[in-house]
Length: 134
Image (cartoon, rainbow, N blue to C red):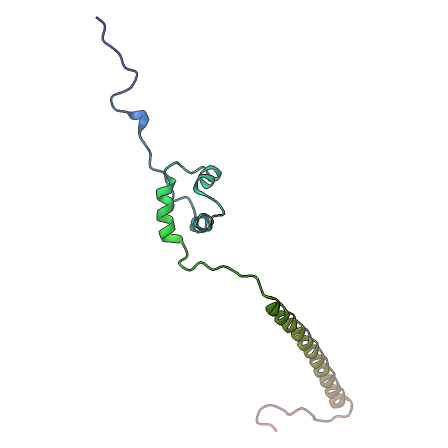
């Protein structure tokens, strides 16, 4: 009688589960992915499919979540009508102040030009000289 031959090896060489190397993922990507998964904009199966992550990624995600998740989740609320009105009033005030600043700068240039002309044409010493030779 012939011995039964198995196609499987006794050492299970072809079935070794290699450890996934996550070190090639940048910290910024890890933080972003954790934020996406935490916020619900993406689920783990979508992330695995999109980024070709292994089936056992869930354990790694939990580790990343502990390490990279923000403890304080900030959410921006929409502005109320009062806040929008206040914002418009502040923008209007800023434009007014910018116009006033522009006029003040033009006035300063005009006065300096007048002083330069008076000093050159009429030989007047209008500006105070700096230092001990006063």
